[in-house]
Image 1 (tube, rainbow, N blue to C red):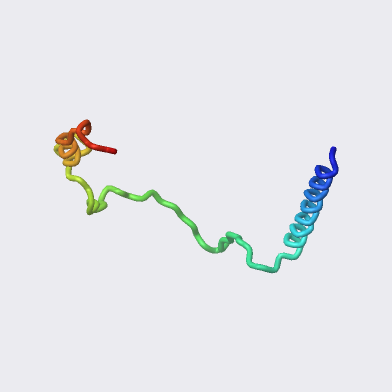
Image 2 (cartoon, rainbow, N blue to C red; image 1 turned 30 degrees about the vertical axis):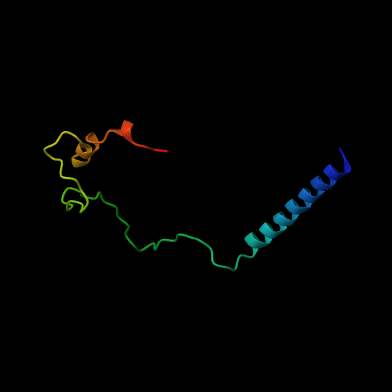
Length: 89
């Protein structure tokens, strides 16, 4: 092991020890705000399935109920294009 590799390794070990000291201080004397999800023991929490049957039609929806083609009116406009004639350069 060369001197520069040894110095790099000792520097890494120093940084690890310093980080461990900082982590110990943070966990032992945590006075700052922490994320914790607490629930009220007297509260009643329930969940239920949502009913999506009666939602209004989206404003940007395509009316293709009578058409088997899922692209609706957009596929018709694409059929008229001949992509081989496009100058893409």
